[in-house]
Length: 450
Image (cartoon, rainbow, N blue to C red; front, top):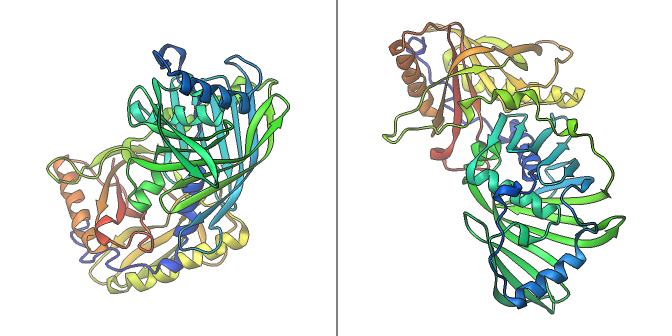
């Protein structure tokens, strides 16, 4: 199939300014850094065997100045507000939106963030399941260390006592910050690296240095590590009915900073347990986004996945193989501009699909996934990336390696004696403007099969 094409799909660099990568990926980042979790389950709850009296005194001060006033594990908490994302080197916020976090006890939590024309980002915890739904990547279930980190993070946002979260807490050092004496506590979880708490002499928590799972789409776009060093800062602690919580918090991960302003904090009352049920997509997690790009020998990993139908807004044209680069540089911005004009909710990064090809002509489709069908205009129409059995693989590297990647996929399909049932497509995850090293660019390849 691809061998006969005699073309190099995307042997070009699509101009960064002409593609909505910043909007798309930073939306995913903004929603994802508002990670949602609850406390570890009671049976796995780490409890320090002993705490030095000096540490206990600091923790007692902290407990008196933060969190729900009522004791107990089933306190309902709702936090709502606005957030904005700033990025190093970009003068204005690259994303803005609203968020809502709801908690009931240690095993029920949900976060929903909305922003502009994009589909919402959702994350949550229900019992043993720590999940997320990224509108660009799909559903994911966190497991093992990452699940524990996410649960711990939101235990802190609930303002739970660190003594119920960590196995050991000690004094690491004392510092000065804004002419205030600050004690830095080293809090060690049951597994993983310690978190560092910065607490002033009055017991006010200033910030926590930790490591959080990189959002899936941010990882694919920016080549982020699995666990990324992060700093959570807290300011404007305020008493509300039922407790004391920060009205502002900032999460810094790499070059991105997400600033949260809490406009409403409600402690107590009842939250229907049904609101914590994960979306149906969580029960149908696809392995295509969770597997590594290469095996231990360096060979690309091909997987057969069961994809859900994905709605798209796109343009379909016939072009010469040598004109693909120029055509995509026109098609993708045209689709994006229209989606912005009509307020359509985008649901993924740009793609191109090759429906048919010959030595002289390519049947090319290019566009952007959307949450709902759009009103067609001119050559911009509704379409879909098909559901069903599909061979998926990652290409990590410059675009001029995509032809070889397609040929490897075709060879693998032939070896498995599979029958192709439609044109292949590519999803362009990495923004070269954010990740200038071509060796780290990530493109996802798909070929539907019977």
